[in-house]
Image: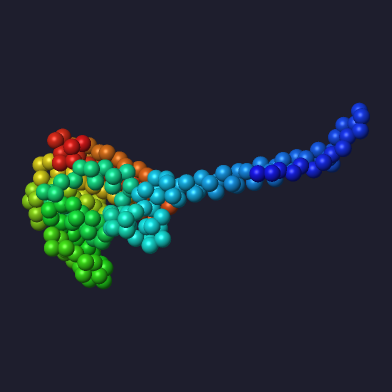
Length: 239
């Protein structure tokens, strides 16, 4: 890169005047701004083509406004650190219950034996149902606070390795979930940093669950948030 500076001719014993110093300063500042701009563009290029967000498929998900990975396949709308953790630890023999269906349901179904998913929105339920594989049992329950929606999971007894809570009425869903977990089962709560769900966190802690927070970016959003796994000793995820 060639940089041109304004020429200042000095006569013997004459120092730079204010105007001359100002001209040189402006030229240096402009040159520095150009260099920094090029560095930023290069940095953005690396992020877009080689960085963490590129590897996780964030740019594809942002453009599509869907929770998808780099390969275009569906993923849960949770933080990437938690997603990576789960990918390494799930087993094909597991059963999963989830509140809130969609791309997460397809992702679970491709990795575990059975998925039971509860959805409150009729139109979304009708749309998603068209793409569900045979190992998914999709239930539509209209939303009613502390009603049949949150109580659905309680109809099952010790059947699930994972209960994934990413729907509505989350605190009550948490409170209804424990009887449906196998002894080594875990609860996963997305957006666990939302103050509205703090009662649910305290409920799990009071029932002797430990927690592992995963804070970071995730699909679609530009902000960071937190997904948390609650577990006990000898759990199915080997935490």
